[in-house]
Image (cartoon, one colour):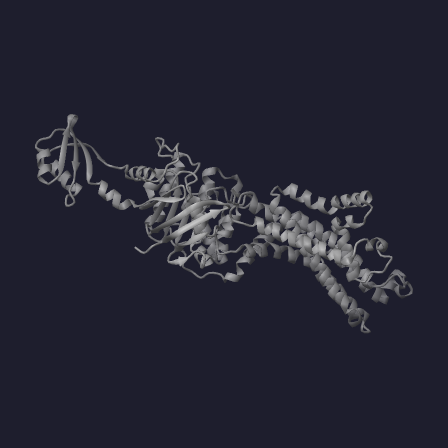
Length: 318
Length: 296
């Protein structure tokens, strides 16, 4: 897949502070996660992609075009959902989204049509004639998403899209992001400090720490690799362990019918199911390793000098 | 992105021309302003002096109308349409324009700044200059419609009805009307916009605008009295504007305390007014950014 974003020794200084420090890398995922603790430079990178901050050295390219040289043309291809509040309080929701779509270049009629569609798409169809200022926080997040989508961009930049949302609204937002990603019409960049948001949506992740690239990883590959590690809890063995080993798997049995299996490259998980059926073994629980991003993240944080108080809580928040 | 399909789709249709994007801002701003009935009523009321001016010019040239009212305008030397008459008309219209601008500008600017909507404008193919152009064009149209455009209409009407080469003899007046109008529009538009983007609270912004025009001159008078100088007049923007208008319209020495109009040199008047416009532009340039940068 061709690169969506190319960072070439990108350095951004604001005042005397270096916010992004010689970032290097090529991002080509369908949904790219920008991960890092607060102040690591995620939002600054998004703002640089939009041309809001000029690089002090190096360059950044989107779809092969330099952001500095083709800023206007690129901005026509981008939909941006900012982290902070960004709306016109005394406009109705649909009028606001239509207005933004028209500024992006859509003719009046198309802008109107797509504004309505965007509202229904994000699930706010019923409240589209209410003033944006009267919306709840979750609704305002969705309006920001609607205005970013209405003009049909090829690249969506979502800055902390789940900020301040309750669990239900957060799931709804992530589901929308996954839906958009799966249409294959658009590339998405999500900035977040929540590991789970990134893990649930992204196929590539760029981890930033103190303005530097701490890791750049393809999550799809990691997930595939992690599928090879399986934990099972079965009813009784019935020769199942031997059969699994004959497939070429490494297998360790524990008390309570727990098994840990390492699958070789040529063995698929469905072959394990088949063996279980043949040996009338009931699989009560099966676990793939799902914490791959956490592993990558922790490794990345160790690799670069860390801030002293960086910890994750149970929800994956940094 | 069809509703029934509920799926996302990129837009591949035709786009409006790049140059026309700023007109979207103008269109929406006009629409929002005229959503207010009070504002619409006031805008219409701004036309009353124009209608009165048209009626007056017609009246002094119509013997029938004069006969109906039992008057003879040609015998009264005070009934005359000249530079002073246009200056008086202009003063009335500029006061109305001032109120209109003070009413419109805070609303149309602060709504974009209060909830940081500017970043949404500038993340699209729209430059800061185009944003400013979109907003200022609204003011330019509104204020032109009640200052120099009706001034030219009255000038044309007077030239037509007077005949005998009056138009050519007084052609300089049309230039004065345009220059005086544009200067006033530039001054109040830029100054009010700069105030509105720095003072995001609408009421405070309006109060500051009024203070600059009505309270600041008081400080100038105080400075003159304490320091025994006349340079304090330089912070009296209405005074500076009046001086320039009187010169542009070749007002006579009796007009509006002419003796007071030579307190500061004319070049100083122009310098201050153009300086205010320039500073306002710099303030706008500083504030019209998608993101605030904290220097550290």
